[in-house]
Amino acid sequence: MPRLREANIQVLSSESTLEELPLHDFRADCGQTGLQVAAVFEEHPALPGVVLWDAARFVGMLSRQRFLEYLLRPHGAELFLGRPLKVLHSYAAQPPLMLPGHTPILAAAQQVLRRSPDQFNEPIVVQADGAYYLLSPHDLNRAHWQIRGIETQVRYERTQVQLIQSEKMAGLGRLVDGVAHEILDPVGFIWGNLSHVSSYAADLLNLIAAYEASLPSVPPAVQQLQQAIELDYVKRDLPQAIASIRAGAERLKNLATSLQNFCHVDEVYPKPANLHECLDSMVLLLKSRLTGEIDIVCEYGHLPPVPCFIGQLSQVFMNILINAVEALLDSATYQNWVEGMSDRPTHTAAGSLSKPQIVITTSVRGLSDPSPSGGTWANPSGAIAPADSDPIQATAKTAQSPSGAAARNERRWVSVRITDNGPGLSPEVQQRILESFTVERRAAKETSLSVSYQIVTAKHGGQFRLKSPALFPADAPAGIGTEFEILLPLS
Image 1 (cartoon, rainbow, N blue to C red):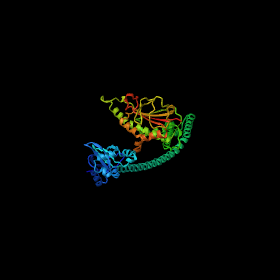
Image 2 (image 1 turned 30 degrees about the vertical axis):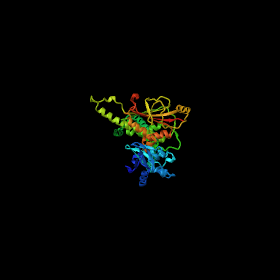
Image 3 (image 1 turned 90 degrees about the vertical axis):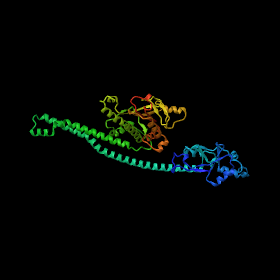
Image 4 (image 1 turned 135 degrees about the horizontal axis):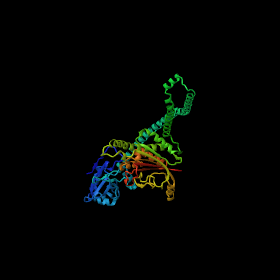
């Protein structure tokens, strides 16, 4: 007798498989008559078909619809009801759609839709737990649309959250930009008057020196005043105090300008920008996290103004720098521990460890030029390519002809490499990063690096490369833990 293998979950998801749907278990021997199967079909109207066996061997499947169609033909009942099922199966034999039980519901629904029209209502044979079950296409379609509805709802909710978060960030950006503007106003007053104060102080000191030279004997009252105000110390310290005020005002001005650049709202079209100023602004904003334990070295080449969305590129540089800083903080903590234990012979000497460092290098080069740091690049697709090759990844669309590819390689690109000397990335971590660059993973969960990849490749038509010698120790360049390279095309 047929039995129903009930679904074992209540809520479906995009990872749900056919085993989680209600499956019908109804088997019959090919020697049984059509009358016996018709009686079972009449008793169980939801049964989609019957699995046929011949001497413990799977033969095929006969659907309820196909069975009834042949009975409704002229003299069909006389021909098939009293005869064995193998006779009817020989007339209606069509290869059924057979799928493993672990097949995802979404993938199975796509295969069902690709069947010929006369097969749309045919049940699917599901092989699970060493047995053959029947799955109604209506149950499959119902589950498919339920999953699609859930995905649509989740996507809608995620979009709403992103819109709210974007509005919050936009509001915060406007607030920070307003605060930076309010800071720049008094800084401008200080900076504008510093030159006058410096000139006045120099004139007063010169006047005092002239009085001292003209008056050989200083009155006692003046001597007491000089001792009270410590005139000699004031002469030495006043220029230094003015210089300190100038340095503080300049630092505050640079910080406020960096905040304005970071909160910059891009225009509709890219505009030429100075990448060095952008990088300096991001480094200045990160100064509070470095705490003197991490050095940042800037090795800038000669760059022309680069057409770009500078506000979005600022976010990319900030994401990569934060990633490098977090990777190096653990190394800095470990190095401090080693330095504290360096007097013990069982530990590594402090001199053998290099100080945590981030190197920012800019240059203009072609894709066919050898990589300055050498080594091997890992592509977002997961493939491995030499550093001096052009990795296959989502970049600006180019001509499909060989001449178009050659022209693309001959173009000049602005290269921004951010390198740290940390321990590098494990294969598992790097694989997760590369997977986050794909459309599927980025839609499920966006990370700072995946957003950076999207900005560089989709918005600027560039390339986003990753290198970690922890994956390729044989050709690991010295002093490189993890390196990100951003390539931006020059128009």
